[in-house]
Length: 227
Image 1 (cartoon, one colour):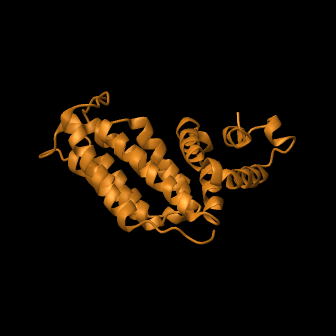
Image 2 (spheres, rainbow, N blue to C red):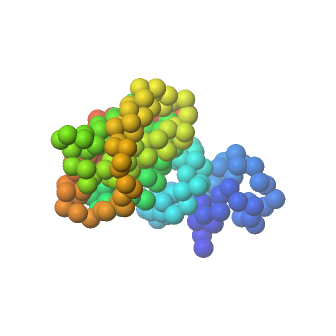
Image 3 (cartoon, rainbow, N blue to C red):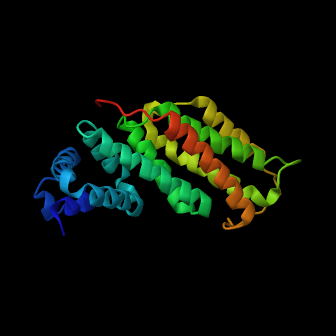
């Protein structure tokens, strides 16, 4: 396995790749330095492997997000490709109803926002889109109650991303809106299994994906020159 692959895969661990050093900051600096040197020759492989690591090792997302932020200081074009590919993967996950990938990719985008790769306002638009969709779905009079689990999932995604965003995502109204949504559920409501793959679910997630693509990446991406 290439040295840069080993460093990306084992970052944050006590392992031979990083010697006796267990400091996360040193791991991030070492990893980003090695990856940066290999971009010219292995850029496509690094992009694919980095995203795979983020998706398969979600507990390391803060580390990968910081590595991307450091790479952005010297190679904005490469980081732009990472963001665009993450957007494509998120859209595919929404279209197919892949709940695990939706949750993980939203967290990865949030981590990159913390590294000043994305504007906080662009992610807020994404959260608001999902929140608005959930609020519409849960309408007791007009909404389709069979979509309750889907709406619950959107809210869970939003709330689970907020701690990852730190001070940049302190939007009190969003939390209030989320709890307002939760209060709308019927008291006698039974737990439902989240059923994905239906044409109605895919239709809505496809529309959300298009909306997110338009606002988050076509208009709202801002690649910073420094962290």
